[in-house]
Image (cartoon, rainbow, N blue to C red; front, side, top):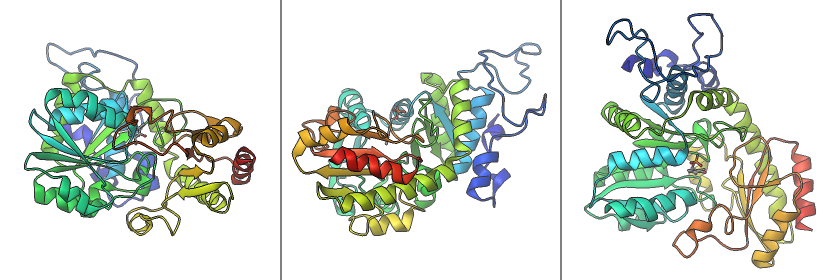
Length: 390
Ligand SMILES: *Cc1c(COP(=O)(O)O)cnc(C)c1O
């Protein structure tokens, strides 16, 4: 079966847009259907005991629709092996239980998805894994957090919700010297904007729920690696733990990915316009967007990203109440958690997505508002924010 998981070579030399549409998406051999079918099936007829027709025996172990997505993901990230899970956190859980044993130490970022922090602080820590927090945008801070037992350095760039930027190549070098593995959560950028494996990362993590799916209609996660042995180990654990992506979910993500490049271009364009307006607004005290020249990570972002993405955060005059008020007054920006869909979303991280980091080193400012800038008309988005800011 292993050759069915590797489509890297089939699209070597093709541009990203071509790979997004074609990798894994081979025509159905039975009918010629140009879109891979949703193989809504749990088991497969064997021709005599052990006689597998297409290599498939049970859909937790492998399912053809999921295989199509896994091949596509591997090709997009420039990795040898892609694995699709029921959610981003299911992917993270499988990764951590594959890489870590009691006594190991991990370095985690001081700004990250709240659920990732919760997984380390409340779940993985119970199995005797220690963690320290570093400002991963500062390589010296990462070095200072290392211990002789550090096995994993975890990076999110751009980070959630403060849009911090980490120099992936610089931290990859530190990880190599320390004998640790560098994991990059590439959810905010997507492989169209940023390719962590090429910059030296060992593992890429995705919440497919966000830009990859792109339409706020599916929850999913992924791991992509280059190391074949690590790929086999992860696949073993994926099957042993069982939190796999179902065929319908895999199909929805595959469909979303076909338009990833055009969506990311428009998300980035719209976010740039929104960020520009916010920097000039009297009630906005700070705008966090890596595309702004004054952003501390701007140069690194310009070096390692194709564009700056669709996420913008900002702080408002008047503290927490004022930030909550802006969220409540927005009309076109839907008040809700999550991100990365075609429709714009607004939220208050302190009370919503990042409530689980309250009181920790990852606590977020109370006057912070986070936007997932969608692909509607930029003028309409700007007008809505202006009325919400009052
Ligand atoms: C949403 C998200 C996750 C978790 O993914 P789920 O699909 O919700 O489990 C992880 N990392 C980042 C950056 C996210 O935004």
